Image 1 (cartoon, one colour):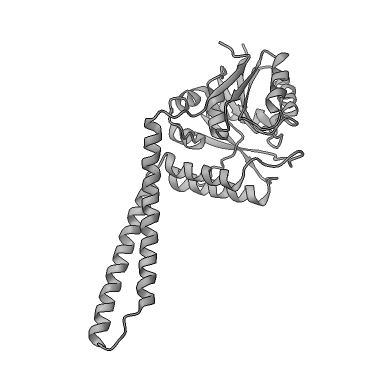
Image 2 (cartoon, rainbow, N blue to C red):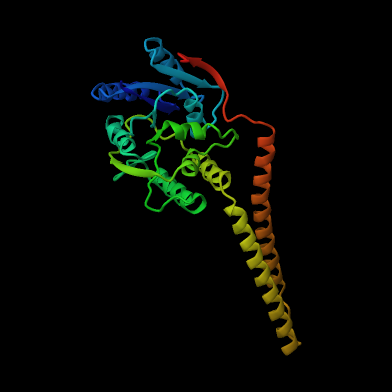
Amino acid sequence: MSQLVSFVIPCYRSAKTIGGVIAEIDDIMGTMKEYSHEIILVNDCSPDDTFEVIRDICAGRKDITGVNLARNFGQHAALMAGFHYVHGENVVCLDDDGQTPANQVGRLLQALENGYDAVYARYEHKQHSFFRNFGSKINDWMARVMLGKPKELYLSSYFAVKRFIVDEMLRYMNPYPYVIGLVLRATNNITNVAVDHREREIGTSGYTIGKLFALWFNGFTAFSIKPLRVATFIGGFSAVVGFLYGIYTIIKKLINPNVVIGFSSLMSAIVFFGGIMMLMLGIIGEYIGRIYISMNNSPQYVVRECINERE
């Protein structure tokens, strides 16, 4: 009996590309007789006619489920929405723009067959813009420092996990999902496989600087208290510096009573320490705000419509 593989694809401004991605999945899975597959397409409230294209695709396919979110919740929330509709023993996530090669999914599935719980595609030559590559580096650094990601592990949006990992991720009900953090806290049995990365043929990336910043900040605060510890360290260090500077000022005045205590140095010290305090209070406030929003049961996502939902 063949194993069922579930493909989860978040969709945003992909009306012209999603059909090609699905065709590529069908072609490669048709050659892998040991597997069958289903596809879950999650429209993250795309402003174009992406969901109308998804609707047309679903009309002739019972193995494709279309999910339409009520507003734009972000890629990670869209993935979490798709996870609720999977039925396969293995789950594969990839992009909707064709840059992640669906025809190399066999490499990811083989790694799962070899005993790994999760496998991420590693790109030797990424075809993203400098802006996206810079964002990926920051995201990788953040996951390593804040979440304990192994330095040699490469993270990407093209990955495959076993079903029990998905079930564990679905236990997370808070409104700030961060899929990388959920995988890392569920298992350390993770590997990389090398795949190609294609140039974008149509459109541009949906990630703006605002969305990337929100993603980084979510990663900083979602699964780690290290920012609070950093705040404590900086606060303690600043207090020591201020105390030593005060002693230096007193000694200088005692040695030379005629010395003029500088107004500029006093103002710079006030501005510096005031800025540090505001920064630390902002971080603490972010944590408290997230607790408040979570207590109010704010949703990860809201589904407006689902097509071909399977029992």
